[in-house]
Amino acid sequence: MAALCCAGALVAAACASTAPRAELSGTRWAVTTLGGQTIGARAPTIEFSRDRIVGSGGCNRYFGEYAAGDGAISVHDVGSTRMACEPAMMQREAAFFQALAAAQSYNRLGDTLIISDSSGQSMTLRAG
Image 1: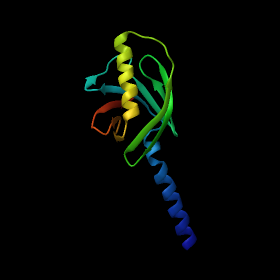
Image 2: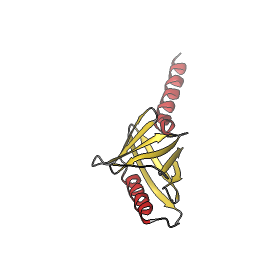
Image 3: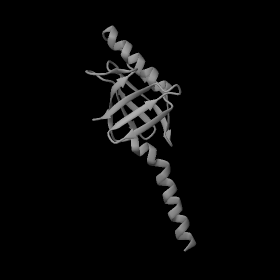
Image 4: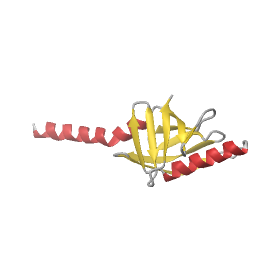
């Protein structure tokens, strides 16, 4: 009986340790607001898978790594292609990459994901 209880506790602990990543994985997220501005066409996207991220900054494709748990998130080792787009698109893409680098917390509410930095600046993403 004790062995069964221990096995159950280990399974529960394993599920709990993967829940935050599972909460983000398997969904393509598109940015709807960034820096207080609504994003329309060619919105940046992000896809989480295990400890990796991939997506589009709106102009360039990017990749990187992330860690998430208990509402905390960190993004690191981000690299991207180097295509040039119109200046406004490049500025928005740079702001997106800065927001990813500064990410400290996240909150998922159904098909909405809010990623915030330590000063409370946030970007909102929608599943889709």
